[in-house]
Image (cartoon, rainbow, N blue to C red; front, side):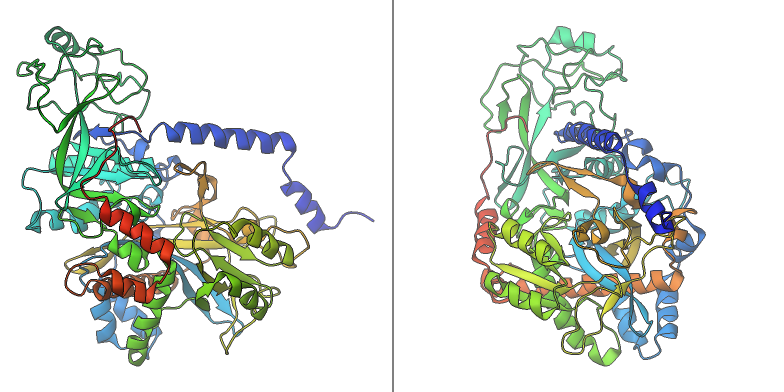
Length: 619
């Protein structure tokens, strides 16, 4: 018999071994190049370059007219339209939510799924909320004349007003961006912040499971170990004519730039100053052309306890920070105190209250839904079973019909999430997660295909993916939608939006041996090691004239997603306030909503790290 059309399509989709090997080699090379960007940098004004902080596909794209129109709508028009489509919703309550002014949770991103139930009713369902999310490097410019895009909007609406208004900030302190992944976007914040303020911004790595080599907290204030140039008088004169285009490391100019000129005496370099030719891309950078070095003093005095000199001869000084953009995603509470005097966007309290804690987030959603019941509003989520002990997971697996999603509550970037569709996948989960230090899990109903999904529990409806518009191969892919919002004095505004699709199309019939994560997992992050992540941008769906059409969404779907995002953020903000009734974090109250001993110990590590730091060595 001749092969069926579906078989022919499957053969066309199959990659040959050489293609797979080449793709894997390219990813390894990309990961190695990405790892080189995880270094301390001093980012000066005037160094922002679009190509360094946006994906190439985004630079050459034009935002879709529907998305642009939606992003240009006022809060009042969004609320009016939503209430028109949902007549039972209390307009005044919804307006209060959209205009809510957060005290803790200022910068958030929500992942949403476009779903349909058995009755054919479509809705946007919230999967999770993220504090300090990614998204701006993936969002086309709303205004082509504003090359800073969402970076500028977020910093001007959310971060800089808080720094200016803070009564506890160090008056002469610096500005920095802390990061543990996504150097493209983290350095974008640093470069735009430098341009907006006219001052050097420090880009500082802050990894999990490592000594704090560059960061410490003293009396509640953050201090970072910043590099200062080490030059002799002769080197100062020769360096003043060096080419500004030679950065010595082959990295983007807005990421690798010379450190700021010190206002205090510097040591004579045993390496001769390092000249304009540069070294191997280390922390010591050449001086750019045009720098006025006439006031640089060469001094051998080493009495300042805030000054250190590295093994490479780089002079470093601990400087106070008045404001920091925190793009630290992996368990930030174990190395950043919850209560600080330095202005952070965001602090770690929103992470523990649901922004990086799926268990507490589920409780925040439920609590807010109770309050919203009379208004007709509701945070829409899959069926979620919270506080599941390890030994109880098999019971819920069986009760959901063998189809479920099991999550480690405190993981992110696609880690610690297991989609289960077969006994084999469940056995693999038990084997892999057995060594997990945490004892509390979340079990959710699986949003999948109408022919295979979780069984309903207690009358909850089954949810299925709407998915993408079928491609030429007649395949439908699962895609989620990320919406990033900025909180300000006038409430919430959308600043970033993109979608992600899965590696494999959604199967109509589930065959033995199929990998459900390949069909259902959308996260683009790829873990390279404990501290480093790469990405798979080929699965990115940009909100441009071409890609957006594939999602099959309209403006009402976008409005629905925005309302779900704001409801989720406000619910977590209210949890923040519950956990800090007197303005200070209460560990006993936190234990009442998340009694996980391992997590509690991690929080105590962060609280006790005040005044401690590593040896200031290389990252």
